[in-house]
Structure formats: C-alpha cells, structure tokens
Length: 367
Ligand SMILES: *Cc1c(COP(=O)(O)O)cnc(C)c1O
Image: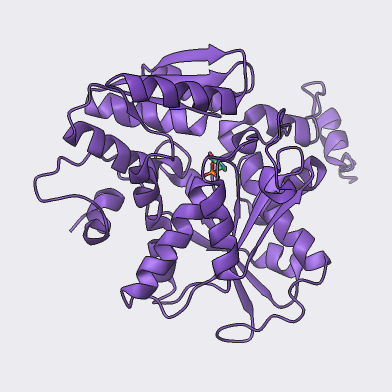
C-alpha cells in the first residue's frame, strides 16, 4: 500500500482518530544517506549518516510538524492559522494551508528571510506581513494575537508540531532496524526539533521499537547562542537565518534533551558553518541550507576537541552519527553563490574554453 505522509505511517503514535481528515503532502520518509567522504574527513571512528530533510515537499523538516498542526486546525474547525517564521515555517504553513483551504498569515522579520522561502509563502497565497523586528518579536506578536482571536498558532510551541516532528526519530530507528545511532546531531534555533527528536526516540524505546537512545548534540550559531550562553540574545546575528533566534520557545525542553541524553548543546561560528556548508556540497553532493550545516560544523568542532576519543559505540566498531540536514540548499541560493567560486566568462571560442578548462589546444595532426 502506498503510504501518504507521516500521520498515516505513524498514526498509532499520533493524536488522530479514524475520523480525522488528514492534510498531507506526502511528507517524511526522507533518505538517510551514508556520508563516506565526510566521515573520513572528520574522524576515523565516525560513521556519519545524513538525514536529508530538504527532500520534504516544501524543502524542510517543518512539513512533518505542519501536516499534524494543519490537520488538527481543520479538525478543530479553525478558518485561519498564523505563525512567526525565519522562513521555512511560513513556507510549510502556507503550503499545507493552501491544501486545506485555510487562511494563512505569516509574520517574518523584514529583510532577513532567504529568497526561496519568501517565494514559497507568497506563491501559496499566504498573507505575508514583514515586521520591523526580529523573529522573537514576531513570535511574541503571534502569541498575543492567537490568544485573543480565533486563529490557530502553528509555531512549534503548538504541541501538534512536536508530535509530527518526532516521526523523524521513528524513521531513523526503522531505517537502522530497531536501534538509534550513538549520536544525533542537529542545528538548534527555536529548539522545537531537538525537543521533538528526543521525544520520538524515548517513545520508540518505551514502545519496544528501539533498543537504545542516542546522545543529542545540538548546535547554535555563535551570534545566536542563548542556550549556550545561558541568557537570551537581544540582537541575534548569523547568516544561517533559520537559526537566527535569540530567545528559543523550547529552551527548557532542549536542555532536558541534552541532559537526559548525556549530550551537548554547543555553538559554532559563521565561518565554521560556512566551511561545513561547502564541505557537505563538495564532498558529498548534498546541498543543504546554511543552518543545516551548523550541525556538521558542530560535529567537526567536537571531533577536533577530542570529544569522541573516549566514546564507545553501542554496536559494531564505529560511532554511528546521524545528522539532520534540516532544509534544502536551494532555499537560500544567495548564500551558495556567495560561498562558492564565481563562474568564468570567456569568448565563445574553443581555444578560450580549453584555456579556461586548463587544457592545451591540440596541435593539428602532421602528415
Ligand atoms: C526551523 C529550522 C531550524 C531550527 O529548528 P528549531 O526547531 O527551531 O530548533 C534549523 N534549520 C532549518 C533549515 C529550519 O528551517
């Protein structure tokens, strides 16, 4: 049978009934790609896998939570939904709302949204409102407005979002035939995803579907690292706009995921994120957006600091690591073009092209 999306696939773990009308774009079931080249470049004992969430229907993991949040908004007879967004939440909310026939309103920080994400919210017909403020300001406004009006909030403080997103953990354990990796790496912004993955891993263990739990390794950008610093950041800064958040809504549950799992929440500089972003694309052929590379940058940093030296794998002789690549690289083409070498321009002439290729012009054959 063709399974349509994460609610159908994992419905026994999700708050739906036989009567629920499921709003799905066939999200989830994303590939877990072995990263041979990156593993070798990072540490001889590491076996790295990339969960490519950029292959969800709107290009980010947000679709896992959004199918659940919009399904429940329809069930609870809302006509309109609203979110604050650094971009991907609005793209996802707009798409699922279009499918469900709901009005969607998104609040975004003016000028700080990657081009691809903004284009999605617009083409799906959301009402896009830019505010002169940052993500944290936008979320504060959305909370107030949805408390006082009959509009459903679909940010990750909506518990249905977390429910949907936890299916990512189920998929990883299912792909590994019943065990979790030793380490689970991901970027941390508003901290909903680390909360959701940890919940998913614990539920699968309790259900007897998984034999173990991973250590959770979350990474913030150094200019937007409130959890690492221990206080909110008034003016968060990073080119990884999806994690440009100074006061994460799921702060406490992210700390719980870290502490219960014996993991780490660390930070990486924009330079480290950019290097990891380029490595992913050039060594593995996997194009993820900058925020997604923060996890890889963090993994490299921990490895360089000797973190993995005393660690023992749960099984086999390698330390198994799954990194969540949260969003597709095409979301943010401007960052890619800035990070990569400029294309050459030459005359439409064989000699000029060969010269640009670094090849010699062949001598005419002598008789
Ligand atoms: C939303 C998002 C994040 C951050 O996830 P949180 O749940 O807010 O911590 C990271 N990367 C991408 C691409 C995102 O869209």
